[in-house]
Image (cartoon, rainbow over all chains, first blue to last red; front, side, top):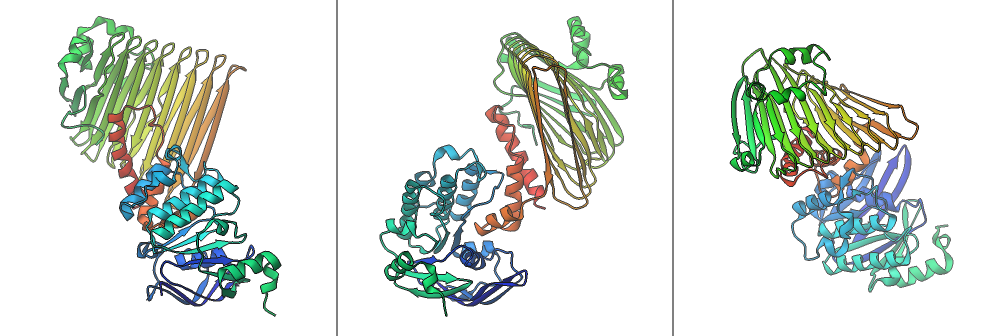
Length: 233
Length: 353
């Protein structure tokens, strides 16, 4: 198993944000994590990446059978875990410089960044001067350059137009072709319409994964009945 | 640092060690009529120099200009005749190696109509206790272009009080780029730039405050001619117990003139102090002056973002500091950009510890 999460609990300001999450992802699988806003999806990704804030974390996070809970975010990244931010923060660093540092760190890739990142953005500051679509595209391009074993993508289809969603889907296909397993977080599922294959879906509500199974069945139910139908009694 | 000791990629070099001079000028420049020589020799040889000297700065401005008007130990005259384009930069290095030395220099740069030149100066000390007074007068002719880079790499115990005055004639332009990269007791300077009709100035200061350094650095720009333009940018980083004051004053006196002043500070230690003092004075209702100032620390969110991309905390800090100081180089020649880049990388490294 590539990633195994067991009984993951996370508290922030004494409030339980994750309440015993279990999740298994095997190599080269594509998983979709559905859930409404505030369900804890982004927090789960951050916890796997090791990004605070949190007061306390309990449970297990195993990556390639190794316990990574005490590793720093950069150590997790170098093991092959990457996280594509929903809204990357302003960095006061020009994109060209950032990409050159990423390339130094991870070495050459079969996919050139110029294939996926428009050249005109290179001289601009990441990410403050980018539109929503540009930021998503750049963030996914960086994920590709990292050559991850597990790519966690946080709402890459939110707040962008149809053309950008298609572009996001083609990034995900490129990541899949490179051999990465993918954990795709979305609350609309729009991008999945353009993906060739999705292996599994999970529904997250109030800090718990309440349902998992075949993507087609779960997505149909989400579209038909909404998230409320998954609530536990 | 900031100078090419092999003298590759430069048109000429001047080295002043305490008061001893060595100087090289590429012969093709002499044939073009470019003069590059020690100021003491220049003053004794060229009577016409008196038409320029102490015209943009007053010898009575303060005790340091007075000192330089009475006796100097070196400095350069750089004269570029009308229309001459000097493609490779000239460099002047001012070194202090003797203890308790007072180095008083006077530089005069005269650039004729439509001429172009880049001057790179570097000042350093191996002595623990010294005073450097450097008076620099720059006269930019009509339509001429000057790039002036000044790098300070002093050490604790040194006081530096440069005094710079610049006059830019109609349609001329100057880009000044200043970096301080090492600890120092005091740097106190505020160049005066006088802009005539349709001339422009782009001034950038990168101030690294380390140890117990006290830096009081700024620019005073007078937009005296119609449609003159000025863009003044300061970036300061303060660590340890450093105290950094970013000063800036824009005065508009003419129709259609525009000036922008930007001071940004990055505080990397709780004991350091940064102060921004931007001043705008408008004496013409048809001019436009703006300023922007901010002081803060590195964003934790940005640090974690970079760490999630595989960078250690030190690497992430270094990258963010490098990005913070990556300004003002757009118009500089390629050779200078490469040298400055090396210095900025070093500052980023200091910034991360």
